[in-house]
Length: 312
Image (cartoon, rainbow, N blue to C red; front, side):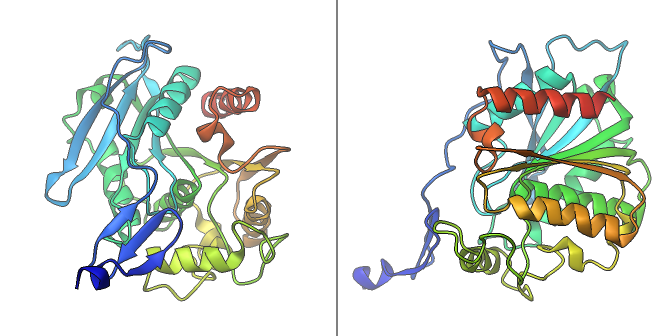
C-alpha cells in the first residue's frame, strides 16, 4: 500500500501530487519573518484579514514615512503559477522592500491561497477580499489609516500575480465598488495565454504551450481551457471596462510569455478601452527578472520606472 500511495498522479516540476493526496512543493516554500530591512529601512508586518480561511497579507512601510504626507498605496500579488510561493517568501519580501523604498509607497502583499488545495478562482476571490479590506473605511489597520492615500491606489503583480492584478482591475471596472480609487496597474511578465500559440510558445523547449495548458487546468480544474477569459483577457467581452486608465507592462526578451504582454496591449486597444498602456520589453532578460535577480542593473532600472509610473 505504501508503494501505491507514493505513486505520482501529477508532476509539474515544481509541484507533485501523490495518489494518497499528499502535495509536495519543490520550490517556493521558504518564508522569512517581517522585519526592519537593514538595506532599505523599510518596515514590514503581517496582518490576518480573514483567519477562518487563513487569508493574510504583509504590509510594507518606507522608513521615511510621515503622517503629515500620505503615500500611494500598492496592492501587490505574487507570482508562482497560482501553485507556489507566498507573500512571506524571501524572494517576495526582498522584492517588496526594494519596490517600497524606490517608489516611496505603502504596499500590501497579498498571501492568497494556492491551488490545487484551493483551486481557482479562490486566488481571485481572496485577492478581491483583500483589496476591499485595504480600502474599507472600517479597517483598523493603523499603517493604512495613518500613512496611505486611498485616492492613489495601484495594483501590481508578476507572472500569475500579474494575471490577478489585471482581473482585480477588471472587477473594479465592472462592479465600480465604493472606495477603490484605482489610479494604475503595473504588470511584470503577466501570465496570460490562449489556444492559438504566439511566437515560440508551441515549440519552446522548457515551457511550451502544452505545459501552460497542463498547469492552467491543474490550477483551475473548472476551466474551459486557455481561451478562458481568466487566462486570455482578449476573450473577455467586458475588457473595455477595465477599471483604470493607466497601465505599465514589462516583458522579458527571453521569456516565452513576452508575446502575451504585447498581445494584451493589442487586445485592450482593440476593445475600445479608453486608457494609456505602455509595454516595455527588456532584451536578454528572463521571466520576472526583477524578482529573481533584484540587484541587476535592468531590475533596478525597472523599479525606477515603476516608481515614476506610480508617482507621475
